[in-house]
Image (cartoon, rainbow, N blue to C red; front, side, top):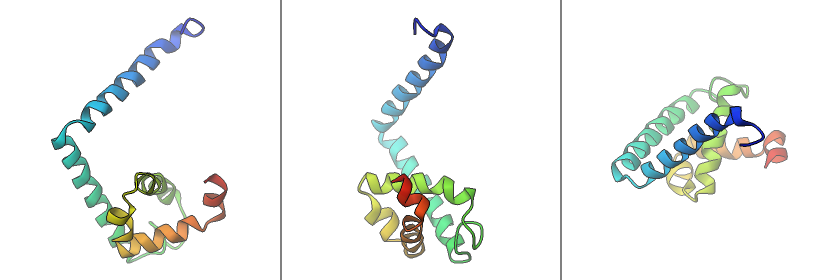
Length: 107
């Protein structure tokens, strides 16, 4: 912070966000609400994938780019059986995405 005092306030805001997130993880009501939001989002994704190859059509788009980190985090946390594998179109989509050269290069 001594080298970049102008960044100190930004650093402190990020630190506060991290502490707030940690507090939310200890709150059962916040966890339940987050899980409900996740289930709702995945339900909407599943419906869309019944209509299109990717999220907004037959070509990979920024919408897919935004969803991939969420699915990767679900897998990283070991929750893929509940939130990916058990949802047929999302499971199919996730396998398709992981075969993309760009995904393989990144991961």
